[in-house]
Image (cartoon, rainbow, N blue to C red):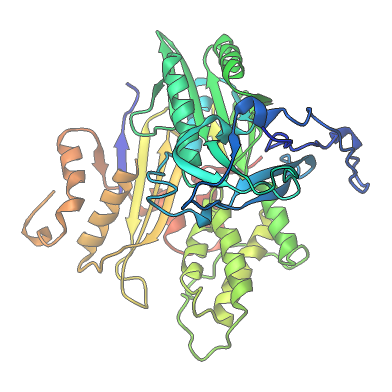
Length: 498
């Protein structure tokens, strides 16, 4: 089924994130042991004193202090090269008690689909996407609750070693920290002339006649672009006037995705991550597989087979699930394997290994968002009927395009047991439409919550078309194929070797 829509219309501690040192990238050489020259970035009273993060006080009677710890991390670029050593002080938030140390903690977070839609729009409009990140972002958020933390390990004041810090700003690790930071940032942007998205509250927009500026926020990472380059420059200056920012130039690596921006379009991949997991699980030199799943061989419980290492199996599945953020070609193979993480057998591990052998031979496919293409929304849906041999539930599959740009895809077992093929298809159509309405007596048993697709159809918000199975690209997420058909679907879903 194809659903189509036209949418044109005061402490001696330094900065948390850059503790007293940084790595000099010039000291890093290819083929050599990486060496870092550690230098002081600021004086010892800089960041916490400037931000007024906390106050050294006696612990009030009846109160308790939350512990703190240092977390160390190597920050790498898209090639895997270490560009900076980071040390961050975090509060042990797991010791917080709801209603005492925190209340409301919800904060909007951008979905991976939002990033892909952002890049799809950028390719359509032909503008460059840039990236910035906020240094010590959470320190800009102010918390309302009365929270105390112990003095950091290694930095206890010898004259006041029994005192604790009363937290004023949103220290990393606190449950309410992300919410406090988002409130600060969104308030600043709204006062600066931006408006937040109607659905995605992490998207901020500025428009003027034919020009538009988009800003997408993911915690402390920000990507932005505009049809007017001067607006991007103004945005950088605006953010640096309020926060300590790092300008990273054109977007190349974001949330694990490698992004290449060209004149004729934008590509998205996870090549670096594929190489990492192939090496991690010792698949660097194995016989490759032409497809990700065997045909006519569904997975079963296989109770008589030998158990396998649960930790290895789950680690492999987790790695593959993360990879599906840019590789829809393995989605159909990964989903059934993920259902056996409690009772994994040798046959299940064999299926997982085949996916890795397939990745070994196909490390370069990228999602391609061409510059020249419409921006109409098209959604494809399909469903089997009682295909899960364990509980006879149907599996829904769907994918959504903006023109020829694949922005979202799903392969998920339905939560209900469909009593007919009509019901199975109706449920997936509603789910597919909701990701981004004909009714008769034989379908009355279908839950009312699925009928919004009928309303959308009657309001002419969507067109519902029946298409031939050869034209339904969502089949890539529906069943196994031979090599020629499998490769044909990969290309038609928008994955190219670039």
